[in-house]
Figure (cartoon, helix red, strand yellow):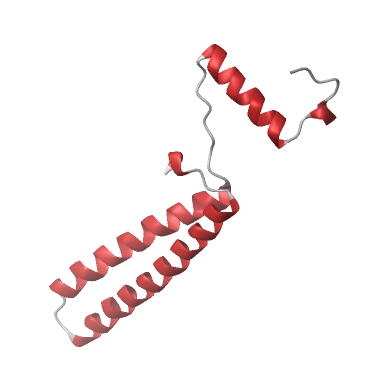
Length: 102
């Protein structure tokens, strides 16, 4: 397949070229997560840390005020986790998310 100019390249042609390059040279093509996807990954890690902290804090608390603090932290973490997972699914459906890089 030959191209006369850069304008001849479209998504199908680029896919063909990447596959051909990969087959003939054994290069591994790595797709990097977009910055918006990286932020979702960071958010999911952060909410897991929040849940762990809330669990440990609740076990070690000595008064009702701390129970309210850690209960609020846990509730907020689960709400954020749901939002982040829903946003991740939207990005997957749009084809933005590279599952190989998770």
